[in-house]
Image (cartoon, rainbow, N blue to C red; front, side, top):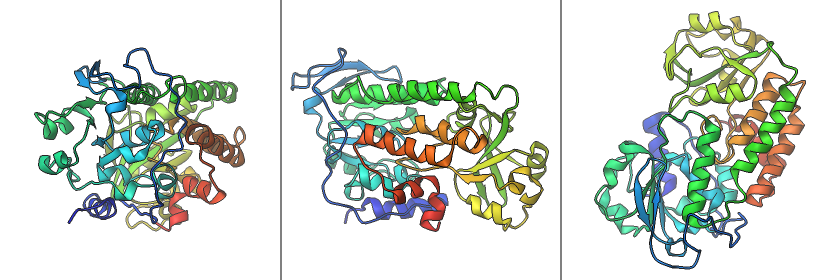
Amino acid sequence: MKNKIVSAVLAAALCLSLAACGKPASQGGKSNVPVTSETPSSTAPVESSGLRTITDLGGHEVTIPAPADIQKIVILSPPVMSFVVSAIPDTEMIVGINSRSFLTSNPQIVEKVFPNWKSVESSFVDVNFAVNTESLLALEPDIIFYYGDFQKKGIEGLNVPAVDFLMKGVNSPEKMSVAWDAQIRGILGTDTSVGIQKEWDDANAKLESLLKNVGDQKKRGLCIKLNQAGSVVVMGSDSFDGWAQSFFALSGIENVAASVEGTGEVSMEQIYEWNPDFIMCFQDVPASYILDNSIEGQDWSLLSAWKNKQVFDVPRTTYAWVTPCADSPLFPFWLVSKAYPELVSDDEVRTEIKEYYQRNYNVELTEGDLDSILDYREATGI
């Protein structure tokens, strides 16, 4: 019997001590993303016209089908899912996906933009990215999306076009998200005159205007990646898994953990010394546990962030915002609202998110949807 997404997510969550939950899938998989016939000059016309050769973001030359001949897509890289969903004409084209794509997503929002997500096959790849090639080939994919050599190991020699999304040496979430979006749109032949680049341009203009008076009086933030079994892992300087530094910089915030290379475990004494103005929590222990000061062996009450109730969970949509995703341009705006509430109100953030989803997904978010994005743990009881 096939393993479907919902059981794979639960198994992966147990293995990785992460939380995920879902709602019943709605019917159909037609994307609400507007698609035009306009095609980037570097790709073949949308009509079927044979193969194309591209250079992917990993620097590999790959021969891929014409856009009209790409009907079945397999996604190995979890964050890439959100970009595919934002650009694809029909989510039914996604026939295989890594279940880890949903471990830090918000099922309530995924349901709106990827309604068939629970029925997409995932049993061909386990939580450690080991691929069952027989199961993968049974999906008859036209193309595979992966991230780096580690994920490539299981798909080499399959005679299926595979496109790499790893950009070595790039630690900017803006550059990476723009490149991912452009690569996907070029492959699928969807409109490249819209998309995440324009959203970043607009976001940067707003941020520049908002932060012009902050000057040297920057708030000091800390991002906790994991808090498990007494071990606190924070996001320090830029790395493939520590994006907080870049997002903080965009938001006029000083990362107190900048001296930590990549991500690393730190003691409570070190956190006391840093004494951040606000804290955001990514995985495992939610912000409410810190605010309740109920974690055994950890006394958070000594920190300014705790005293001022400035501890928050990272927002989640199709992916958690602290990693590059299709909604990344929204994250700095939210960060500014937490670090500098006098500059951006909660209502303004809600309006920004709602309008973003109308523009990019043609989806109308409800107040309940916005609640789940901005306070996912509270909304779901996790």
